[in-house]
Length: 368
Image (cartoon, rainbow, N blue to C red; front, side, top):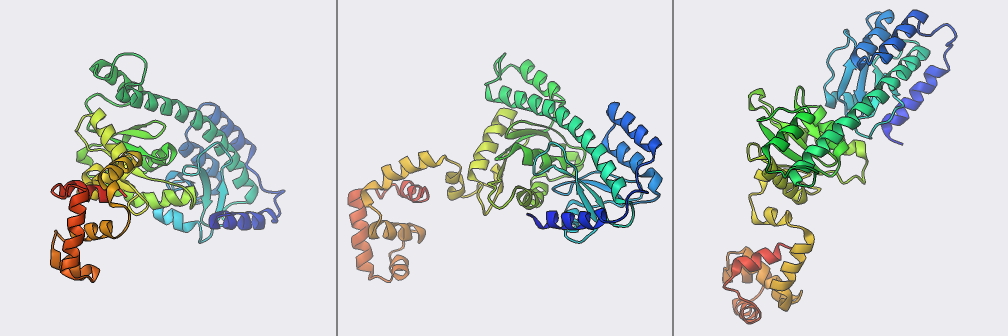
């Protein structure tokens, strides 16, 4: 059980023990909310109408990652990081029981636990659950359109080849994106986390598939998408739990959508626990570039180049020798050896391999 869940259960238990027979949504409010749900009203309108009879109460509808879905007019803005921290500080937190992912599950938050009767909050949560279920069905249709767009870029979708500009324009339009946008592609280990992360980018237009997204990144809005997502990623990782392998790769903007997709997936492969969000433009060392090559390919290359050296002192000496720019003296000092011993070992490496191809050997060592 997470700390936030423990706080919620404790507070809801305290509220539930209070007298409730006098407190419930007024009949006219309940009827109005039912009508609004049937008409497909959004969470902003529902929350506003549900709380109108309570006076100037601050009430928020937040996702698990702290994104504000809706808030009452008297509630000040609540940044995502502040919302995440608030879950451990108090107030009332009610999980909206509806279909969702660990990243975008809705929570009703009232900072003042005495601002509204518990039964009223419970009924409001039930109304918002109906709204969420309706939204989930619409989001599923959007995700299907997003995956169709990714399929066109991959060349796996039925219909014309990806080179057909018309097919791409149609897929963009079906996903709600204009032709000729300033696009970049993102790839992640979780499409749900990616969708929630992009949801934090106010006003951004995007389409998300199973594990990749196309984002219309307007350079005029001043938003650095990579920096924003790097800031959000720890919060999303916390939502997914400690065993969640959550990584993100970003292709470049204005490179062409198919090229950007390839770049994003390569950057995703290069991302790791230390750098979970990696843009392709960050691959500025040979080691980082090699990290994006599939492990199976790197293993074959390493075996082919270094197989004759074994795993002992020759390989260690070679690695230190190359790391020290082929300096005999510095290698001897680093290994605590006489310089003649270093010469002898490197001569043996030359017999077993092609030391003149130093870059090949260095790359093979980085494949481990």
